[in-house]
Image (cartoon, rainbow, N blue to C red; front, top):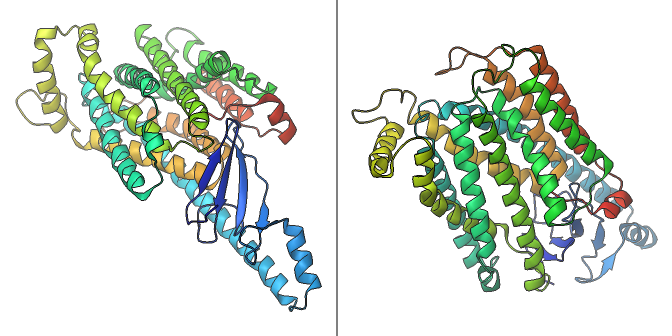
Length: 437
């Protein structure tokens, strides 16, 4: 077992072993520690074992380390200094987590708001924005994959993983992004974050059916509250008070279908990691292998689905080249047919950059803390984003009035998200083999 400045992981179906040395600055563990983390739990579980610096491969419990120092002839101030260093490291890590959480919340809010604003100039060309966003991820993910491959983190065995499931991931994510953007362009801003939360319901259902997961009472109850909150927010009250009044059935249904496609993609990704653990003989599949090939196939299928999707908008196949040309002109805000494209290219580019930054920040927050902290940070952005989207904004000057039913539904939804993310005792987590979304 060799120690390096980055985590080395040995993974089975349910657990992974992470080893860190004292140079690592992005873990919560003390120097020279081993973390056993359950990949099947929302709340990572870990135990800390001390690795004596005197014996490179000797494992000692921390309490033995302190006893050894007390019984030795070395001065006692070394024990005190070690404790002080540990407390200082813990304080530093706490500040890092708080800062990372704050950045993630801010980026999550900006991402939700800019998602709607970017579709104001691109209202007639949502597929163009979807393709640009997808190609942005392809370029970034494959660049990182290239660097990690040459650095030795990604092996030839990882690259040789069968690609069929990546194709399925690409199809689902392509359908998710294009249906999501097409519907978001037509929906009131505050309704978008609410409808997005149906992702949780789809994910729980798919993971139960496809992966055989069993969930604790709080997660089942949380999902039921989320469902009740969504229904209350968008369908309660008189027709004139409903936030979706006048939008019809198709666009909300497309947004919910978008969440279903994305939830299905996340479940297939989970199955890729589980099957790869056996194929790679316990090694953990690098996440950038999954993200890179998934994004690559997503970009491909967005192009292949374009004729079908554009036909749904009433654009014949023969006029598709002209549609793409006009879409590119609207994105760049150049050419003769730029009516209604005010705000481009600034707003679409801001959304693409913020979306990428948010996902990187979210991954980093999971890395330095836990999935629960990242979920709570994302959850906190929902009510704030709803409030911001209800205000008069640049290119959306009219604003949206939120009815009491919508606000009540939003409160129910947040209660469901909070209940879903309540950490469970270790024994209860093991009994339910919970799925880490």
